[in-house]
Amino acid sequence: MTLRRSRTSALLVALLALSAAAAADELAPTIAPGELHERQQRGTAPLVIDVRTPEEYATGHVPGAVNIPHTELSARLGEVESESGVALYCLMGPRARLGEKTLREAGVRDILHLDGGLSAWREAGLPVESPGE
Image 1: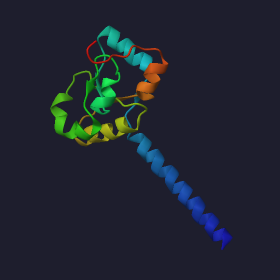
Image 2: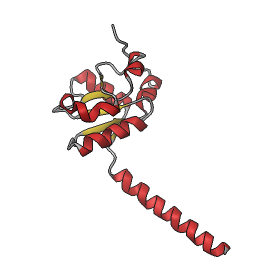
Image 3: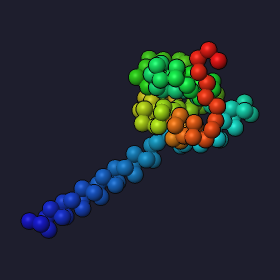
Image 4: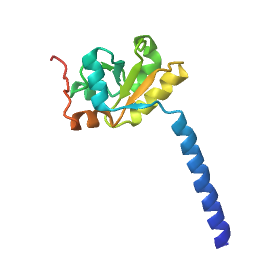
């Protein structure tokens, strides 16, 4: 019985690895915080979308970012169009990936994912904007 469980476990691990590899192929490429900031400075940045809640956005966000919570993206697709593409972020990354999935399903193809989210942006010492600034 132990050999059978061992084989079953090995098969399960292999299937999970294949599934993760397939999912990784569908993920948008990442952009480093410093690179996004440089592109903003040059005027070549994509539309930056903060997919966190309005309350989180109000505590500080990437300068110039538009707040469209990931749960509202499908209803607000008209706000997402940009010739330079879009870059999504949340605090660390998971909600941005959910937003990315929504945009892909709607046909948006030029999507970037801010590597490490706002946490990495702050850790890099980049400017953070708050409403009213």
